[in-house]
Each structure stands twice: as structure tokens, then as C-alpha cells.
Length: 499
Image 1 (tube, rainbow, N blue to C red):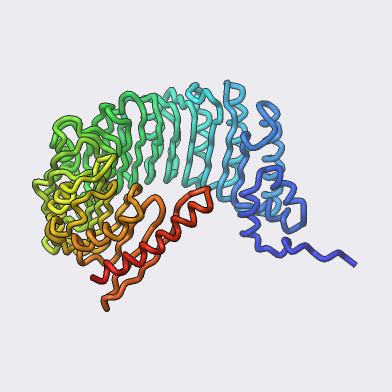
Image 2: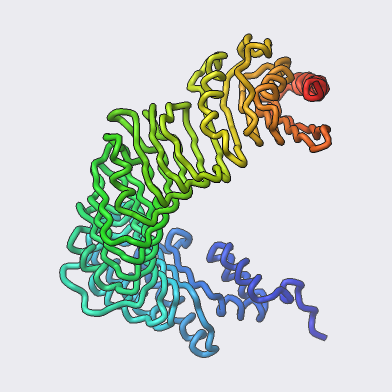
């Protein structure tokens, strides 16, 4: 009588594939030997990954092992007719010999029609250039290849490549490539739709001229950013990230369909610098400026008739802005209070606005800051749904007297207050002051060093009140004392909320 099959033998094959993919290679091989079902699943896995960093074999021994494993796997796949989706290879490429053996493994793998190929060098000297022409000629052979990713390579393509690839997405990460090699490479992908250059270096100019390109990401970290010229009439989305204080110009030529633009860590010296970007993009709908600098005048101008969504986050040096966007519906801002001399948005009102404001003070938030806050929020008086998150410090004495508060602001619907140093005894008073200042809030969240308090105001006038203690006190007696204090304060908050 045969022994019963283990429970793992009854698992569906796709689930076994996921389990094997998360196991180290040694454990995956052992698991595949546990039963015929697991052996078959290991051979039929849609992902083939060979990674030197996860194996005990190094240098020549790794390439010998990889060659044997790949040959065995290809033989089994050809015999059983398995379809494989993705091939991933990572090796330590240090010289011409290791690069040649790496190319040999790729030449074996492309006998199968992979849709995704990921190649990576784990060498510490990844900037060393090798003649990459033989590798690229191989990569042009697969007819079904859609995605190609190369990481930490030194790419040298001396002349124009003979051949055209049907590739749809190309990802180059942490790779060294010169201007001529980059030009020769991009000219071979007329059907390219998605291009990612992730912290690549070695080139001074980036000319993108891909007729089918729809999304482009350029992330650059260095002393100087390359000048970028984009000529892609079907481009819809562009993400541009560079090091602060690094010069670099972006030009858009015939990008008529570009609707989404995200710029990070760029330094805009002149007030109209941002406007110079977006005026080249007539159909722009979504604009995001993150961690950008305004070291010149501390101001910027945004004027665009088609813009519908605007996000400004942590733009240091910002003091003044003019925003003339008659079709704007969504606005997100994170930073300090600044002077918004002009803010024009949709005549039907902002559908959604999210504002995160910090006082800039370390010790204590002064009473006058709340006056500035009230004046700043006036420009959002026609907003349909305003979310406000304030980072404040301590509890100023003037807030104890509600008569000293600014005029109420009725448009804020959702309010979050983060005040790490607020004493527990002042929780109720701060909540009461915020309710006087924002009488129409639907939800109010107070985050402190000890607790997170949630208040939801119902239509019938009642409220739902709950809290989570987040204190990390090691002393159990101290923890119990704080917990009991919060319980008492919760009753005080409920009384204040019903006044």
C-alpha cells in the first residue's frame, strides 16, 4: 500500500509557483524534490531566476552552475512544452571573461520566447564599460519580448546597431552609458512605449525621439543634470527627478498629448521658471512639484488654462505664489503658510483640497499662527471637501480664551492635528478651540506622543469617540498612569464637544 500524499501535493500549481519564488534557491530545489507535483511546478514556473548573490557559488563556479542549470531547465521545458514569462539573471561581472560568460547564458535563455528579461550586474565596479554590442544583438532576437530591464551595467555601444526590436518597455537602472551609446541604443526601439532611466550617468544630453512613447521617467543624481529634449507626440506622462542645485534644462517638442508632469528636487531660480515648463504642454492636466527649491525670489507663477490637478509638496524657500488655473479641481499642498496673492480655480469650486501645514516652530506654536492659518484658508472658501492637517507644538495660553480665536472657518470638513508635545491635560482644551475655529468638521483626529484620538460628528448631533494609546513607556506603572489620564480626558473631550 502506497503512503498517502502529503497535504502540500494538493496545492494548486500557481500557488506552488509563488511559494517557490519566495524561497532561496537551495530551499526551492529541496522543495521541488518533495513530490512529483512540486517537481513539475518547479519546472513549469513562469519565472526563471538565477542570482549569484543568493547562491554559494561564485565567479567561474557560478557560471558553471548557471550553465548546467539553464541547460537542464531548457531541456525539460522543450520536452514538456512549458511557457515561461520572465527570465532574471544577476551575476558579478568584473572583466571581459565574466561578461562573455554572462552573454553566453543570455544566448541560451533567449531560445525561449520570454516576455520579460531582467539582467543585473552585482559587481561593485559597475561603471566599468564593456562592449555591449553582442549582448544587444542577442536581445533583438526574441519576437515576444515586451520588457527589458538592465541594472548596474557599463554600457558601451560603439556604432549603430543592426536590427530593430519590438520592445515596449526599457528600464536602465544605475548604469553608466555615454551620449553616443545612449543615442545608438534608443534608435533601435521604434515601438517603445515606456522608458525608465533610473539614476543612470555618463551622458550629458538626453534626446528622446520615440514616436510611440507614452510614459517617461528620468531620475538623475549627480553634480549636473543632463539637458533633456523630448520629442514624443504620444507622450502622456513624464516624471523628472534630479539632485538639488544641479543645472539642467528640459524642453518639450511636439508633446501635444502630455497630460501628467511630475518634477522632484529641481531648483527653480526665477518666478516664471515653472511656467516656462508647463507653457510648452497645452493639454497638461496633472502637475506635481515635490521637494523643489526656490532659491531666487522665493516665489513662482503657475498659469495654465487646462490644469485640473496641482500638487505642491515641501518646496523650500516658498514665500509667495500666483496660481491662475481656471479649470483646477484638485489641490494638494504640504509645507508652511505662504502668501498666495492669486489663486484662481474652477468656477464650480475645488472638488477636493488637501492641506498639510507646519508652523516651523520647534518650541511652541504662537497664537498669531492660527490667525495666519485662518487668513490662508480663506482662499479655499469655495472648496467642496477640504482636508486640513496641522503640525503644531505645545499649547499657547491664548487658546484657552475662545474670544481670542480668529473668525470661524466653516469649509473645513476633515481636520487632523499632530501635536507631539501636547500635555494630556490640554487635550480637551485644544479640541474645544479647534471646534470653535472649525465648527463644521465631520471628523477630527488628534495625534500626540501618547495617543491618537478619533472624533466623528454625526448628523443627529451625537459623536463617536475612540482612541489608541501609542505610548512606548517601558515602566508599567507609568503606562497605567498615562492610560488612566487619557480615559479621564476622553470624558472631558465629550463634554467640550457637546457645548
